[in-house]
Length: 283
Image 1 (cartoon, one colour):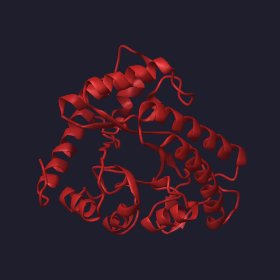
Image 2 (tube, rainbow, N blue to C red; image 1 turned 90 degrees about the horizontal axis):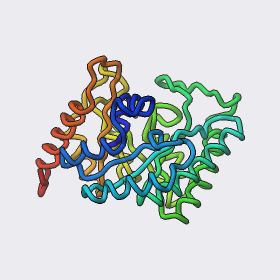
Image 3 (tube, helix red, strand yellow; image 1 turned 45 degrees about the vertical axis):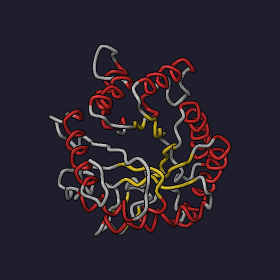
Image 4 (cartoon, rainbow, N blue to C red; image 1 turned 180 degrees about the vertical axis):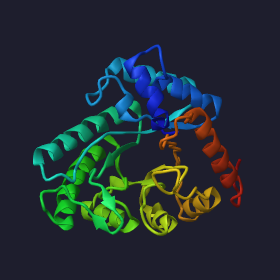
């Protein structure tokens, strides 16, 4: 489970500890539904973007251990697409800091973004000071390589997420990873953020590069997007040779009645059924 599924309730709790849910509660939700691992998004740790206190890290590690849950990753907000070198440098420093937090947590992966520039179909809208896409990809790769070198020292992989921004297709995702050229930099494959005519083809293309996932309900950012065919998705992941966790991340997508405790269970059931249907699969 990706903790971001509980975004609204986690934010509510951060504003008022008597409301919503905290990360410990999300871990307990995993226990109730026999979810084996949790991706603890950095935003919901006390003091973010600073590192959380050692005491908090110790508490969450003990809490998950006592409940038989693995911490599969964490993630930060950054912008490596901007022409502002200072902002890119801040993103590198933030990522390095959270690589060290991840190592303390025992999490093998830190999720980062490429950059938040929005992309319309067939037309990347650059906020990079008029720089070409190749120029932006080059300085982005430099930042990611520096982060990955730090990750290697701490045993933490840097996972770049496709977020419908600078990276909106499998080819763009691979192009960036190849330019980074570092074995400790891989792909976080967001199944809802390849904005192409055939997202399944992009997902299949990325399986060999995947080090983490976000399994979404739709092949897009809204309820108008096509729903995921979980059996097709799971077969693509399986046939591509991926072994590891496939975190679920549900989103409100404008639903006023959105309840992550309900929506996550729906996706969980569909994923388990799809896995069970594989040759040698387990329910």
